[in-house]
Amino acid sequence: MSGFESPATPAAYKYDLAVFIGRFRFLHKGHLSVMRRALVLSRHLVVLVGSCRQPRTPRNPLTFDEVRENILGALDAAVRRRVLVCPLVDLYDDARWSREVEA
Image 1 (spheres, helix red, strand yellow):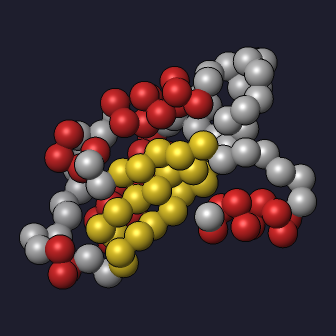
Image 2 (spheres, helix red, strand yellow):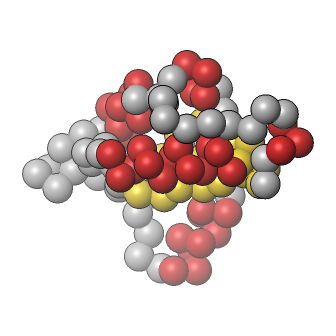
């Protein structure tokens, strides 16, 4: 993940945790730019991948495992340990979806 600088000491991070929610099909430079910025500001990054239980379709051509591999593979090993990629189930009830994200 070249092109960004993390703080020299853990105390220098502004936040302990950042969360980035998306489908990430397909991962692009915009996604990586947001992740880079989150990792500069935050000690840890949780990436929640939506539509993770959907079958393969033209809209969802990749499985959750493939998306996770793409995300982690695009990151330098030095920051990979600070990133957790988790599935997020599609729920069409805002209150339930919010609780799932918080969990």
